[in-house]
Amino acid sequence: MWEIILAAGWPIWPLIIASIIALAIIGERSWALRKEVVTPTNLLPEVQKWLNQGGITKETLTKLEKHSLLGEVFASALANAKSSREITKEAIEETGRSVAHKLERYLPTLGTIATVAPLLGLLGTVIGMVELFGSFTNSGHDVAQFARGISVALYNTAAGIVVAVPAMITYRYFRAKVDGLLVDMEQQAIKLIEILHNERK
Image (cartoon, rainbow, N blue to C red):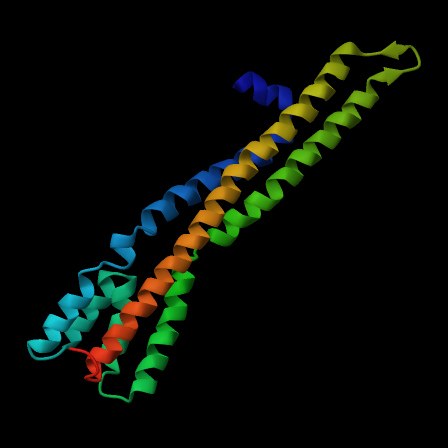
């Protein structure tokens, strides 16, 4: 592996750094976007039980906010439970925007890496071609420099694709997962509003 890095030259280092960042983001988002962590299915029945047992206290709201991202949405709804349906809904939407931002954390960086990695590979290709053509002189050509130019060009092209493809696939996957989680949150929040305003038992 080290020999390949040496053969690829300095243009490979930005791609290596980009791949490390992409792997870190993929690992972090895989852990953070688990459904049971973001939108636990047992939370709404638990909140409904608390309501039936005598209401929600400040301690309960604090506990909800720390429980999960769905808990943050529920806490904002319960804090405005005595207000009109419209005000409760506005509070949920405001918290929902904050929650959506948290769900999408680091995804723009992953998308940028997926877009930029092929360009970094192309930069390495161009630098390799410059070295390649620089090997030709009036007295012939330098075989070692010619071979190095080819190595730099090909290795960087391949590395750019290798970094970009997984980054793009995981970026699309996480975007779809975030959208699904937000829809699930919205549906559960609507159910909570109906419970708070006696439209659902």
